[in-house]
Image (cartoon, helix red, strand yellow):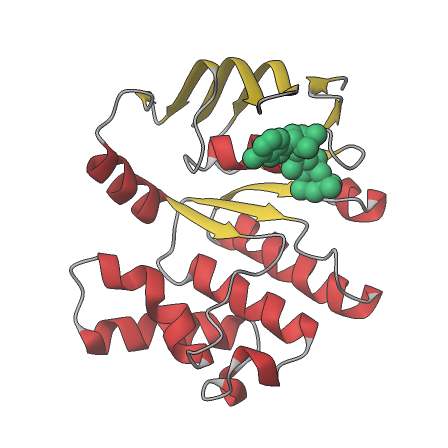
Length: 221
Ligand SMILES: Nc1ncnc2c1ncn2[C@@H]1O[C@H](COP(=O)(O)OP(=O)(O)OP(=O)(O)O)[C@@H](O)[C@H]1O
Ligand SMILES: [Mg+2]
């Protein structure tokens, strides 16, 4: 389902060049739950952004469902991404001026669904993460774990085939972390979502199908 071939990512500023990813080739099957580990700065978020079509590699190819995505026009790419992929970001990326329900509905706006349909999908997603009683709250009125769950609801509301999660349990205590992990495991087993999760937590990684380790931009396992 997801195919990365010889991915290289360089960041250049005036003075320094950083090799964020070096020669990464990775095949992820449909329905697979993959975790990615490695020290800070080793390229995990960069990898996730490239898989999620939010960033382009300097060299190499990304294929999803056998479509080569490097030369797709921006608008088409944005639509493809919106329908296929749900993102849970390291720092939530919630819109602070919008209540919970509207945050979750946001990615659904880019589809041809009615307001009523959007509300229904967002409500269902919020129910799955146990936040039906917080739909009118604003992000600033939520705990870290609750914000993380809103971010998950937003990522899953449109039933994307692929979920990319960047340290979804990173800012949480172990009880809340386990709860979030269980939500992801359920999505993977019952809805066959393909999931790539960055984590610093070995016990979380052990619950997934496969672990990829990065070190200084290279795959070491
Ligand atoms: N926009 C950018 N410009 C220049 N360098 C960047 C940029 N984004 C990332 N980098 C560099 O690329 C490398 C990989 O960054 P990345 O964010 O992928 O690391 P990470 O593994 O997710 O780390 P963390 O665990 O701290 O989140 C780092 O050395 C970082 O400094
Ligand atoms: Mg990161």
